[in-house]
Length: 258
Image (cartoon, rainbow, N blue to C red; front, side, top):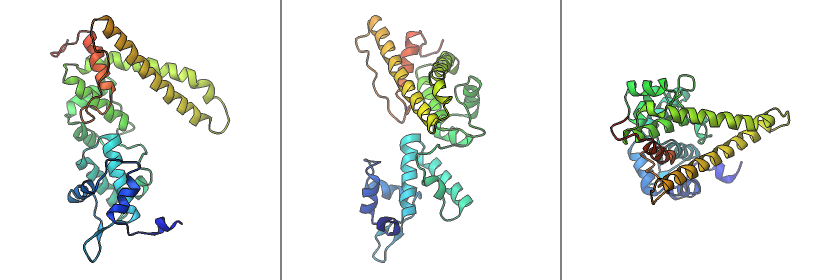
C-alpha cells in the first residue's frame, strides 16, 4: 500500500490536488458548500481545520461525478448517499464510490425529481418508447433523454412528434449491430470490449454525420448560420437537444405543436 493510500488525514488543499485532474472546477468554496448542504462530513482537527480520509475523497468524487455526468440535483444525490449508508453502514457508498464512473441507476421518483416532470408525463414518454427502464430503475440514458425531451417541449415539440426520432435511432442501432456482429462472433479474449468500443465510435460518427446533413439542409433552406450552439447543460445535458430542435423546426412543428 502506498504512503498516500495509508494516510487518512488529508487537508482540504490535498483533497483539491487529488480531484482537480478529473474535476478542474472544484474549489475550496465548492467543498465547503457541499459540507453546508450535509453531503459530506469531514472530521475536524483540534485546531478546527477540516480533515478528510480516503472515504471522504471518494464520496466527493461520487458527488462531483453525479453532478457532471448525470446532472443530478444535490437533493437526489444526498438521498442516494443516505440510502446507501443505511444499507452499508457508516462507510456508506464504499462499493459505489470505488467506481464513480459506473452506471448510475435512479428510482422512478428520483428521475421525476431530477428532470422536474410529473408522473403522467413520464408514463407518456415510456408509452412512446422515448424513456426506457432498466428493470425497475432508470439509467443515465433515460435521464438524458428525459432532459432533452423537456427542453424540446419548450419549443412546442410534443412526445408524439418524437416517434420519428426513436425510429431513426433504432435504425441506426440496427446498422451498428450489423457492422460489429462479426467481431462479436470471435472467441478471442476482449472481442466483446473491442466490439463495444467500435459501436461507440460508429455512433459518434453517425451523430456527426447527422449534424452535417441537417446543417446542409438548413443552408439550402436559406439560413445563414448552420452551426449548432452548445446548449446549457442544465437545460438538456446533451448537444442533441439543439440538433433535435432544428430538425423538428424544419418539419414544421411550431411552438404550439402540430
